[in-house]
Length: 461
Image (cartoon, rainbow, N blue to C red; front, side):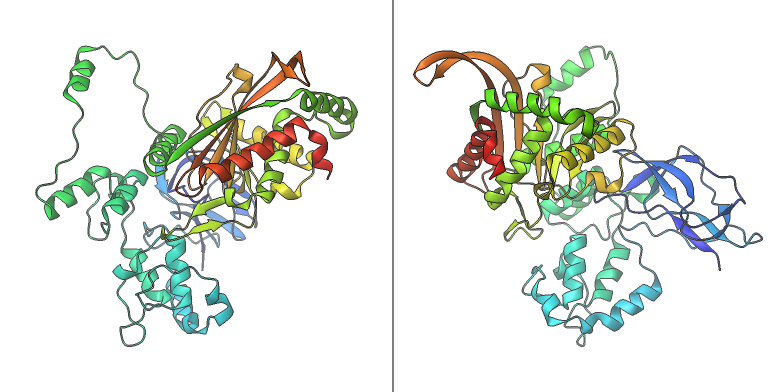
């Protein structure tokens, strides 16, 4: 039987891809791992590899069209086996009947030690550990899932899987709006591409349930201004710009942002970087930069102040202090803002950190980021110093708890050890979510970063 080749899940926020280019001809013989197809997401271009050995039979999809992730785009089998597959399931997760049966069989076999680590989704809803784990991962409200376990009194994993197959695909804005309103997407008819539920579909469904509801209208003055003013250029909200548009808007409207600003004497920091540049550039193959050093400093500070390496739990009932420190480093690319993530940044030395960072930046600017490059971040650094920016208020990269803005290093006349001297000063802006942390603890974290910058030798300890 032919093996189905489907578009893999390319990150937590990726829902659809654009088919760009087949790398092999239809009917060609391929092996495991053979690059077959290039696809584009909101963030980068990825290559889909063969998941079987045999002959490739392409599906009826033209290049340039958009398809949901997990869509079967080809099959790999015998030479005389044409493309034939069951209709793609337009849900966030594709689960075969065999997998569902296996899930039901093993549902009640989950160990007590495993279930002890699971976060409660709804304490009032009886559910198996495996069902809770899947519900947490897929953000499913267990109170809405029909139960079949325990004579209809207990939700099991198969129930969650069945529920997921009924949930229509929705745009991020529509999904967020439905979640804020406590609405269930099941039963809402989508009018977007391939039945995708849009914001207007949610508003329409809400107006049916609540006739008094009216979708917010733009201010009259804005409407008049738009009509009277000639549009010079119409830039569509698509690709990475759409992602930034939606995520930044969500961050601003859901976090309680507070900005702390401090100025650090970076004179010794600059000298340390210059000495490293002279002594290590040839051996390392690159000149250690300020971003590398600040990344190492922030990772160390996050280890000392773990409450800053945090997020709100999925059910919104607790604050999670995260065990791993995965540092996002904001990068400007032609496609827009991208945030490569250095996994376990606190466990890496300067050379390893700098090497990984440069590899990720090169891939991001070429539009070839790997899925793991752009996921799992727990704290973000964004540096605008190269544009002569002193201080600014960056937007928190959800679901993280804070973000550090780094300004330029400039000569200033300041008091120093009882005298007036010209020192190289650096401005830091820490934006944190006041729902998760208070001002004083966040200030201590920023103060520690300042101490490391003013005395880099502290990093040796």
